[in-house]
Length: 326
Ligand code: GLV
Ligand code: GLV
Image (cartoon, rainbow, N blue to C red; front, top):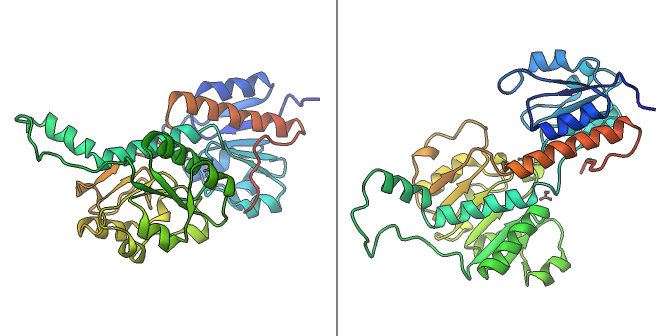
């Protein structure tokens, strides 16, 4: 039987779909009224006595927070696929279920990764500025020359759902050759996309475009830094829609300044929302504000999936998309 008094706290306004679902399930739902990321001290107060938290990737969910909520806390549903904001160890120790939103945002993030590849290679933001500023004085044979994606080599770093969805677009749409690096090989993927497995140095050496899709864990922090930029082609483009700290951003700025690589497209940053000094002054980088999953369709579905996870767990059923400690 559903306990009418079970409480759910949502750390920031999200699309209505999930909120509605939680209310229909009979929970007492409250949503942070703060316009922005809820400050830590307020968050610690607001979670007191709740059975479930619907959290965002900007909220740190650690042992202190879980203890502030209390022993009745059963589930934290992250409104994201990445869970690096959550201490999974602390949650396991306290028997708290953690869920994320895999699958529902795969296509949206893959589309943005592709958009960044095309934007940086075809210099779209730069061309847009040029045109708006009235600098376009007529067609010219040498104006705004960029690179093609067609038939180039795409290196997928991290082969999960999103990496596979990027490969699908690249292989079928752009006839790109796919190489990939992950901790494990995937033969089905290799067959489907005629893809070749590489070690990290091999991938860096051979790829014309590199798209990053690894989770942020201690092993992937600064996976790409000074030494890696040295291996990459001078004509290579690097795109990151995963987590900022996977790239040593200072080393990236240096590499872009010195034209060690051709360009980069970033949706995530090492110290989000701050940018490493110098980054925004470069014309060979395209920057978006962590909007990989930011489509009307996907954000609504994420809201629903996070809510459904809470409904399941608070009703004593298994979560739909639980996260285990890697
Ligand atoms: C967004 O970055 C997510 O992890 O869903
Ligand atoms: C996320 O859904 C991934 O597996 O890449």
